[in-house]
Amino acid sequence: MYGAWTPDQIRAAEQKLFARTPEPQVMRRAAYAVAVHTARLLDESSGSVAGRHATLLVGAGNNGGDALWAGAFLRRRGVGVTAVLLSPDKAHPAGLAALRRAGGRVVEAGGPSADTAGIGAEAADAVERADVVVDGIVGLSARGGLRPTAAELVRRVTAPVVAVDLPSGVDPLTGAVDGAAVSAEVTVTFGGHRPCHVLGAGVVHSRPVEVADIGLDDFLGDPELYLLEDAEVGACWPVPSASDDKYSQGVVGIAAGSATYPGAAVLAGGAAVQATSGMVRYAGPAADVVRAHWPEVVATGSVTDAGRVQAWAVGPGIGTGGSGREVLRHVLEAGVPVCADADSITLLAEDPTLWDARDPDAPLVLTPHAGEFARLAGEVGADRVSAVREVAARFDAVVLLKGNTTVVAAPDGRVLVNSARQSWPATAGSGDVLTGLIGALLAAGIDPWAACGFASLVHSRAALLAATGGADADAVGAPIGASALLASVPDAIRAVRAEAL
Image (cartoon, rainbow, N blue to C red; front, side, top):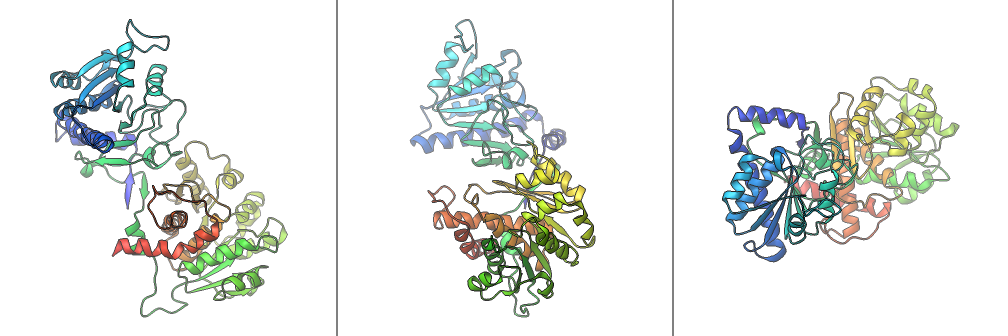
């Protein structure tokens, strides 16, 4: 498991580091990492570094200073470097002096020759002829989109961009973009990820983020967000041991589907089977259909006849009428962990008395998409982490907000995120598969917060495998249905377990 830290946490850690290591030395470490990744990008695009041209977009403060020092290091590799200063009177003095000593060129963004957009001829030329651009416009303190001059310079960029710390214009805390922003080919950050690197609408987290070691590790403390790695999920995924039987591996109940929506039952029940549950009990109107697809499932027509389970997954396709309400009420009263999805969330939002049926000692997991979340607690807004954390505390439940980046909050404030790296799971029935996976893990005794993280990671890996036939995330894929995603669940589990060996 690794983490992401807020700007305030990073700044506090930096101050502790500066007490031990002079700040200029730390800045040079950071800038050297930016230069290395910039040179690598040049080499990958043309097979050479010397003789190419890098343009630095330089704002005020330390972010611009990192870019200037990086330019000085690039000059030593034979790269032509031009720094375009957006705030000449606020440019980092030591970084500016280092670039000039190294033979770098410095121009102002505007000046007497500025065109109608406010961009000087030298600045325009530097941007247009660049082989790579280093974005040092703003840093972790910035909010909102780029100012007009910076936005116009960025609009004219055609070369790949290396961002220092984060692409300028992206909110550091939420990853949201409100106005003009940089889209970077590579982002180089220092000490650890920031929330924007793993959140947002794809401006950052779908691109490589390189974390450079500048000595912050000893001072960071607990992260704001947690992220799981394949090997960790593979090591913790429940698999049978020599002493296990079908009961000890976990018995999960699936209350899903209806005569109108039998597919929800097939997908949720199948996911529980594929997740290596010891036994899956299905209860609902789609019993015959479930048995036809999954003969190993013990299927009955009613939750009252289902038998004993160690966890319930309830909601997909049960409807929001009286029968669905009674199914949910029965499950909440059962005294075992419950994963409530889809229609269950709508029912809880519409009928507050259903909350009274809940056993207060039994863990509850809610797995809404954005629309269901809005019914339950209002619109999510740009700050998805704060919204999910608040709802988890309010309902004393683990809340999993679906999306390209899944956000999972525990009642105690811990937040885990899983970035899918692609959008293949965005297909009808995909959420039903996720519900079955979570239910199976709950029945196996996995902590609900961790169960949601494990399930969402395997779910996204299964979607990728189904779409690309087992190739990596950059491979050309084909659209998939939820059935294909479900069929790839065993391969996804096998892949993450292999990472753990």
